[in-house]
Length: 377
Image (cartoon, rainbow, N blue to C red; front, side):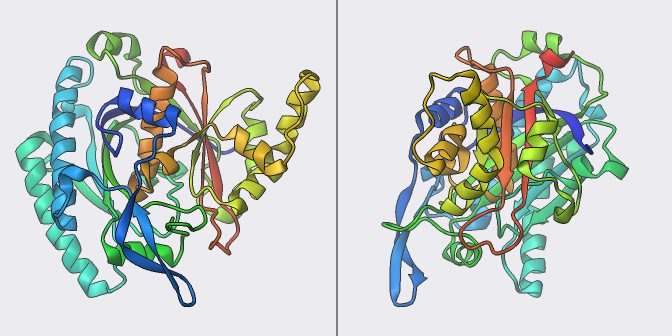
């Protein structure tokens, strides 16, 4: 199996749940609902329009998208600077090779895209120079055309021929609330409308994540004396083939990694009936194995309810659809679930997919096994 292994430390998170790990944990485990009904409507079928749900951040209300992203970036940079300062004795800032800033860009007009990029990069570079000056010459900008659930980590992590050798800082920013963006997303993804079928809720948020090569010197024990609530996680991408046609199915990925029930599964994608049917077809054997060992436990009465049972935490449903922030927020979510005093598992299985009711392409899904790095020392 061709896989990628690395470590990650979440330095800052901004979502509808707030900015703390405890708040994120509470939101996930209690299935909080942050969706708000928009005053605008989307066409859901011929002659039928309905208001749709979004997950905005109230503090950014009334601002244009560039300003929203700029404020999210500034907040991330300032918190990141604080956290890195605590790391300096174990990991000097100069050892961090790059600062990669990623956001989505949905506009299809090439000239307008270039103008938006130039505007965004100028503002973002100024923010870095003011709040994290040590990285002013290390900034790289990347963009995601967010038309489906993000299932891939940045290329430098998943590309086997150019695996990263030094720590890399990644800040992901997204605000998908403008009507143009919501309408663009709705052409590819099911958007949750009032009284409609399950779909995504366009949202906004940000993350700052330090990615660390697997061979980088272990300093997890020392870190715990500096960070009271943060943990380094060990992430194993169970398949990292660049071509979707080469991806093994979910069942194969789980079996090769030794998956069994009971386990904690974090879901990342659109919770549609199409996805649940596919998920059940891939995982039913694990239910049957469990029920053979626990004969007293009755089988669920309906296959889809059985499939839903295995998805304990649905990040997209709780925090909204965060575009390029989806996967790094999922890593932060996995960290909170593993580090909680209430944790009942030593591993989180993150299943990220791009399967939804409007997707006619071959289903793509990737599995990540996440553990606390200290357990891998």
